[in-house]
Image (cartoon, rainbow, N blue to C red; front, side, top):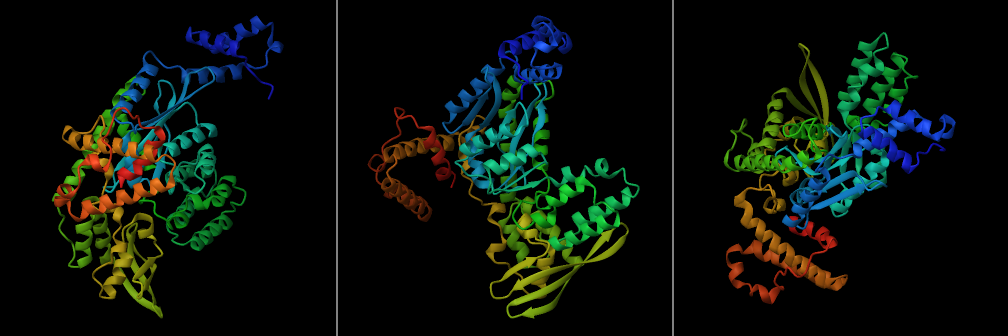
Length: 550
């Protein structure tokens, strides 16, 4: 508590470091000037930490100006661009956060599940790249926003997550997946207390050699652990397998395993498959996003260069999504079966998701459903599935419940809840009951090829030129809505009138797209024209995102 480096001394350490003086000589000069070690309130280790922190915050020539210019350019392009800069006590950039207007609107469509990870992308200043990544309807990674951070402590993550909330109209994700970072965990509990938080399974499992290799029965322990994690479909099954492993190999004193079991609701598949995770078991989305950026930047990239390349990265992602849209609308895969539900899935889903459905359809060959119990409308089926383990075929049994009154199904595998597509076990029960169509509730809207995405026509600096007309129209509407909301101020009755008016316009446009424009009164009699004299407030921008996106 008493260790403290005064500001003038901090400055002296930093100046000497910039001059190329080593840490030891740097510290010794301070000792000599102070009259001895006993006259200082800090030691060489504290000086070293101070210098390392200063290096992270020391930007190169043009870096700060480049960031400011980029943020200003994006704000001029569209008033919904969001940025935030966190400064230290000396006025130096410590952390950055930003999100372009298209990415903010994309969060409205696909922000239910978010993968968050940090990596040393811009190693020149040892700043951490922190992307917030989701999954679109083509199973592609989509970037919502990102930050550049000077450290990974809890206060930094709290700042970042709060800026995220401000940026996303105070709408937290329903589910977020990260690594085991304690600082992240604490910050999420503070800022997103209602979000479901879980750990990347890969990060946990890769630590097995480090934590358990010292045991003489290491290979047997690893096999038992993997079996408990991957082959348990129910919570009680996992608990039973885990306790058997602990007892058999006398692992009661292993602190790492104790912590993992205490936090099993954060990483064990049987504990997390009760809600939708878009199929994510790991932070692979964040990692793949980092790899994607690696094509444009490297360890020697300056912050200035990184900012300059940022638009190129996003442009590439937009083009990839646009191509997938075109293929899903114009190219149909051949059906593998004669069942009508396959045609339903093909007509509704994007090609990427339909291919996943076909993987489950192929597994039907190895599934056999048998009715074992019928209690009024609830029918219980056991589905035996042949699985290849090594060079041997093993029979695995899954339980599927079918409600004949509500036409609802639930498999212990929880594939639909977790991934959003029906599993082979549930489909085999439908076939056993001679049901060849599925109700709409088993066709998840999130994966549809005709999904409405308001962000597709939002103006950006990296969109294709042919989208410019839609972009301008969108921005004009945005400015008009800004003005209307400013007129309404905080009057609840006026806001209700706005909502009713917008709903009416939406319905009329949908009902008669061709005749609506000719039947509507001139724009001047409906709403005041957009004017550049009324600047939209930042609060207004935050309110308008959901209106436009939907």
